[in-house]
Length: 165
Image 1 (tube, rainbow, N blue to C red):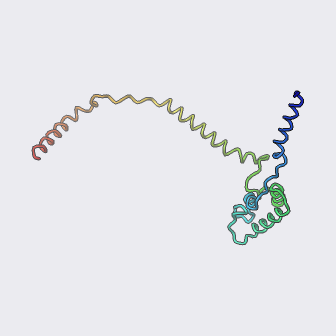
Image 2 (cartoon, helix red, strand yellow):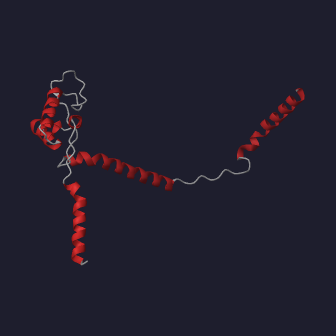
Image 3 (cartoon, rainbow, N blue to C red):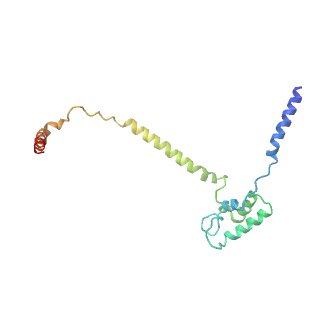
């Protein structure tokens, strides 16, 4: 077997292995999946799927239009694009990862990371500057001599208690 034949066989096997990936059908989006991707326009701030207004004047027509578009075989991106054209970007329940919206995706992580770094630096600085406390002396504290009359009284009272018992 020549090098060329080996190469052709390897290319053929690779093509067969990748064929399902290339020609795989994109998953058909569900009605709920698309409804969760859109914000209801009635002002409730919820997604179209979770809008809790009975007979919502905004949510019900959107649900109906989604069902019609799915029946025509439109993809999720096409349906979301149509609603974005109709209502603007505010209809999407999460910001797109384009332009200025990247900031909305990146900022929360950047703030948490920055706060963590600052907190670690403060803790490290405080642990370095904190002077170690001297160990407690094993002998009696300096004020022990003033306690001698009290200790003597305690000893007498304990002796009296033992005698009475």
